[in-house]
Length: 128
Image (cartoon, rainbow, N blue to C red; front, top):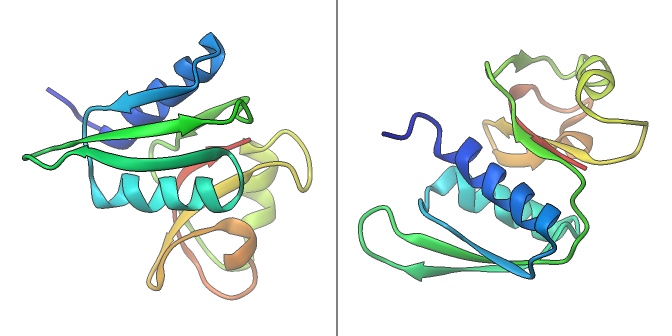
């Protein structure tokens, strides 16, 4: 039984990157995972992704670039104000301007640098 599909998917991606694979298959296709993968593609961490199976749960095929050092789900998912992002950057990212924190906001899933100073949200994951 899965408790957190996003955490499982990010773990599969990180393990495939560490093994030097060029692609991996994620077992669950959720909307949150798809939004996170879109953000990772936009920021250059993965090459592309596509839905491999469209049945219930589904599967996603991800093409990797070898750019990810670490990616994890943030648990528990903390709420953050628009002025508090620097505190969380220091906690989850290795250096300033390195990596991104995925934030769920009222306007959708975005990177922390786009949300900084404009909107608060809930911290979902980090990638660097």
